[in-house]
Image (tube, rainbow, N blue to C red; front, side, top):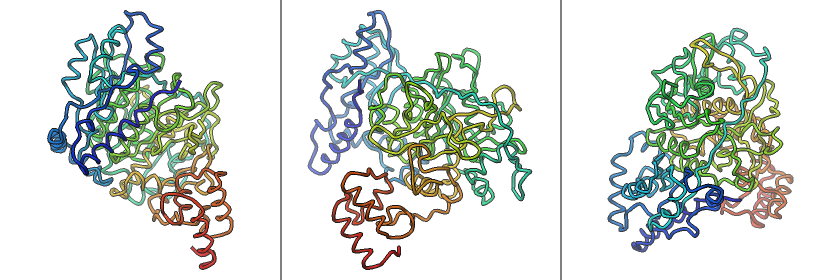
Length: 560
């Protein structure tokens, strides 16, 4: 059963507002007709199997934001812009979104209050989705569906953390002392950093400085010696609704306590000389506790969305998250535009945030071998896991997405990755999974941004992917390959030449053959191949591109 995508809602909103500016205001452009039916098929199926006394967590989407005239819209935008964090505005200016738009305007408080009158308990509020998530009795749903401002009601889906992979430690790791010269003593984290060429970046002075990294996870053991609390800008426990992401008395206790988040935070940005370093050990961190492993390791998507919006409001540049697939999804839902978390990641990208997400540990699963959400997002960097020799792990989820896009984007060390443990303030060890390769890549992104703070998410993504080890022949196992941080920092954006479709630095008959196959529909080009194959840069690939490439070769030979 396929979920109804919210993507069309946001596309229509943007188009409507553009038309409004060009041709005059129409009230209907800010108000959408109720969905038919109001209850989604997923939710209806759950309701049919429930009793009236049962409670469910649901999304309630609104038809509008309580603004009905162009003056009201302009006023709401102005108020939102004045409240915008200067760092958020600076980051969004890089992608030409320094001004607020419909997605930035808060949800109508009056609508929220009226929903709560029906016995609903508020969980989260999402201005991006124009929705709230609530927990409410089943018998209230059909009454809520009749409210004129309710656009649609859907189930809040529950995810699972990628299963932790049990791997015995193989003591083949290299320590910093084996190599010289090096500025830092990396201890047993040396080889996982050296494998992605981040140590060279450190020695060039780039360690994630002035970059804000949002980490979404189970909580964080901040008392560990490798966690520099002076670098933590803000934290939020979305499960227990407080400002402490380290487990404390009275919390819904995770099992084991805050361990998973500690692995990931330390792998990304930990620092303790002679013991451990993460790639971005000088970055600033926003910590979001969004995942509770007390309930059979399940998490709920509304906390993830709330954390992304929180991070956006505080100026996050990069996000790192490890999520698992959900039983409700079919492979057809892994299309980059259906899952709520995927839609939220795409909105974060539009706001100038580069999101890094685990590909998943499901390749050995008999029921699901695909990537997970939100790794299916078009502009995310999804990450697979390799071992110390750069060989893909058996558990690392493979692509493609349902719509045929190559996944993962890149890979990093996810087998016996060195990290801090939550067992004590000086405890270290090795963990495996794409949950560990993901923070290494997110840290790599932060390092690249510390070298090029003006780069947009698209620029960082291209530089990282087009300098990875498999960039000429990306596939659904390794993606574009093993990351090379220093090469990405030195990338000059001349790597994609119109006509050089196989990226070998020459115009040859082989490029023509690939182009013909693309035009005939025999090959589905990946995003960078499309750029190279669109010879005349008109946004389409057709016979005219073949003619232009033939003429280019006849006129210039094989020289780029």
